[in-house]
Amino acid sequence: MTCDDETLMAYVDGELDDARRAEIAAALQNDPVLRQRVETQRALRARVAGAYSAVPEDAVPDALLAAARGPKAAASNGNVVQFPKRAAQAPAPPWRAREWFAMAASLVLGIVISWRAFAPGGALIETSDGALVARGELAKALDGQRVIDNSADRIVSIGLSFETRGGGYCRSFALPGPQTTGLACREKGEWQIPATAASNSSRSDMQQAAGAIPPAILAAIEARISGEPLDAAGEASAVRDGWRPGAQSK
Image (cartoon, rainbow, N blue to C red):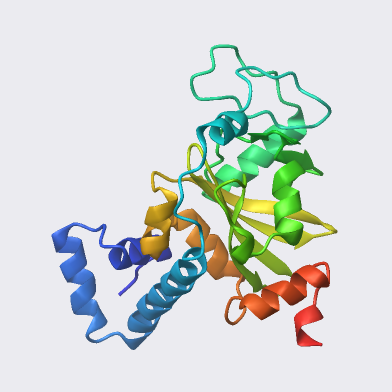
């Protein structure tokens, strides 16, 4: 049976209609390759759910949410991608070609860009050579924040960290108000962001099931991860070593 990854994700998450679900269930009885793909999806969700179990359940303070949402209209500085509030009345400043290129590339990959990326320390996301990269509080958290450091008074919550098939590192993260999850990978000395997705789930929901993690993020993780996510000791070691490629294997 031919079945794409998106359909299998929907099957594992229980999002298919009864007829389609029954069709796949029947195919699984006689298709070991398909069964293995389903088990891979389930294992990935279990690993992601385990990583997000450390995200604090406490509500994020209203003042912090307000600060994270940013001003209604902000002037563009350099090549910063400005992400206006959904309800903002003022139009966003025109983007340069590189911003549109980065957005177009994200859409081609099936990635949903969150329209909120302001923090007290400045913009959380900029573009660099056509790629979206972490800045400000987001970059700071990706550099040095561990899962055990997650708390309600932080802008960023860190999920799982893992080595990639290319020998580098990626880390998933969550932002409040509205809930946004994303994946950042260490490239050329900075954190590039290949995937972000808006989520209707609260942080508590994310703790309860991997199905609460948007499919775009799960797919991005699955496409890159090598082996198991880093445990607490591995994460601490990677932070200490500055996320240098191959540091875990030494």
